[in-house]
Length: 599
Image (cartoon, rainbow, N blue to C red):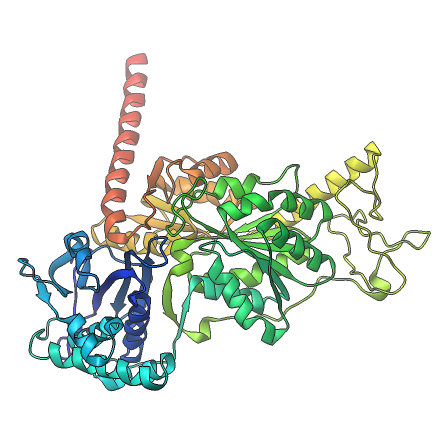
């Protein structure tokens, strides 16, 4: 069965379901609302889903889409082709119709010569229900009927989202859509009800923010910038209930400086932004490095440079994050590949930032930020928050009684106290300093502090998270990625494995300190190693070569602002693997020929 094929779960056959629904329309037409309802409806019917959004930078109008891939098993990647296409804006039909699967169905409020398009009176049903804006809910009724899901399953969803008279209008639109669809759609896309279990529906941004809260974050600041804004919204909405103070700053410069100040005062702190916002934070990043003050920075990548494509995805800021800031100081850079991993690594970042007194990055992108999935609540491991602060007799003091904020230690990590500790003053500043924090231009003191910070980075490197490897321990090729490419690469690996290609997948959930030893050991076990990256320059490939010395044959790149999908990645990866293997064989034969002629 090829990638993108629709396998429907029917009552008798017991086959697995893989169904992709795409809803399109302009901003303001309820595309997101409808997508969220269809996603949760699938969960209530016993299925799993993976939802992705593609939207323009518009307040109203534009051409947006919300894709919901429904499966019998947990779904962790999107699909390029849609099996059901619902166009709330009829003018979008020509753009999206070419990506309708063979045997798929398109619904639009317009006549069409295509046999796959069913003209649907969405506007008429919406007006009959009480408002032209209810076309999306009429569409929900049609889709529920197509999937064989009774409307009473949707009742709690509507009650949660709407109130009063507007709730009744939505119910009416839903019923009109179902009534119209009966007898017109057949059983092609019907899903038999499956056993259900408790699930949590969450986006990547939501998971990251809640993970930070679980990790003890007590202060957050930021200035709205897509795709980081969603993180700030969750922190602002949910943080105060657990003692988190949120501040919307006047700009990104102020945001990071506020977070550094809160951290100096003893609160675990974070900011969230995107590449352009982080560019403004860079001077403050160096300040955190000199102060040795822990802070977490969530950076959602999007296409640049400058404003670029503000609502699309890319992985173009890896080099930037690794090298940002003047001077040398250690940092931690984590790259979650799923909402579950975003939750877990946010806790990890909060802990290690404080343990080693460094800035820690959570490097995501628009694709992961806006990806929504259903998750097993048992998978959320909330660990106890352990503070890395000193109090009382643990506070180191010089002979004169001064607190040694930057005491030279074997691992470079100085005991960290906070202002308010009786009998001490916590001295910190942007200049190079002595052990008690006071400004110095003494060259020997400078050497001691630089070497202390280096030892701290070396100690942090001992806690590096190893790459996650799936597939055969050796074989034809290995596909390597970081961040949001994780699940797409894994599904691609499975597709190629079914074709008889022995491919492994490697996910780097930490890119700095880099797991050089592990990558130097993994890559040579395969005939060809390729990176998969949402950038044009192969930034991860360069990093692997530089840090581990491993040979990387090339990079499968995508840089149009859209994420990879398994059905588009698989053929390109297959092509690049065979090219790499052919090149390697040619070199081997050439070397053997040279040896023969030389003898």
